[in-house]
Image (cartoon, rainbow, N blue to C red; front, top):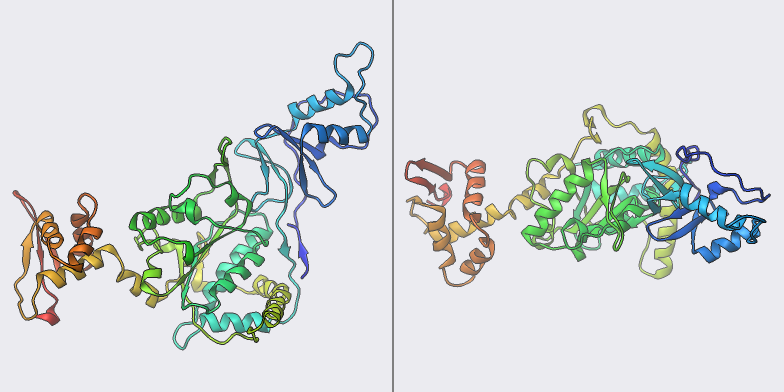
Length: 455
């Protein structure tokens, strides 16, 4: 597969004050060395365009090899080598030194701080050609008899690939792929990694509040979440939803390495999620509130035969190799493909898409939907059309006092202050014909009616 670094001019270091002259002839270029004051180490450009970390002893050896003398001259307090180290530490210091998603290798300035990007991502060079295996995989995953999800998928990929190749920080929605086990959704997630520079990281712990350290995320353009590591806890899901908003629309992010000072950076990120479509697995996705809807792509994946045999290790290796060999042609297709005018979005380049079956399944799993199921099971007997009325506290006590699984579910669901009132408020907006808030001078009274079909 032909790969290329970002097609941009080499970055230039920010202006610095004139550097002292050291009267020694040497081959080492000062611009090829930087001092990482947070770690107390040095960085030197290698022959492959990346950077390697050196301690002072190692750098001194390189400087001596470049012709800088370690011997003091007459009347000097420092040797030329020590003078050179002093210049590097005072004029070529950086706040951050590591790969940085969306940036080519070299010195950059961001948020008024100088950073050293030690390695570029590898982008796939577009090349005319056919991509029948990639096409068959995509068709099998994302097309059914009623809904063709490919225009939204191609639009999401096109915006990401083009923005990354042009070194633009354009935001993009979080892409969630929901489908049966072993249908190829994780395989496609790995293809996204290849298209975005072949670097990925796992952001789920940080996005759900399980850790405050996130420096590893800044080294990858593709942030991958898989359902085998995810939580269905409502607090984790709400933290997850809040982070989705931050990751999709914020221009800057706070990078917090463990044991070092945090720094504000502007990474290029795309987040993808794969999740099995069983109810307990779908519950890892955040609740679909209004502020989140346009920041999510919700695709349904289908289980179809793979385009090539994958039963043996050899067959699987040949299949993966074929997919990777076709990616330059697929990138060429994305480059020339135009997003349909009715799908163009001003903020993300392409408008969001939510597969109706996934939305319906998620809506049935919301806390307020679960509360309504408990209400119907506990409060209403078939054929009795009498509404229930009372306060949120009355309802909570009634549900929690029920013996058996319904009471257990109520105690688990209504485990924080005023949860019952909050969920009833949402239900009154979603289904006002069933849940009504009757406010008066004596407080708030709720009226809940039985489903019409059960009366």
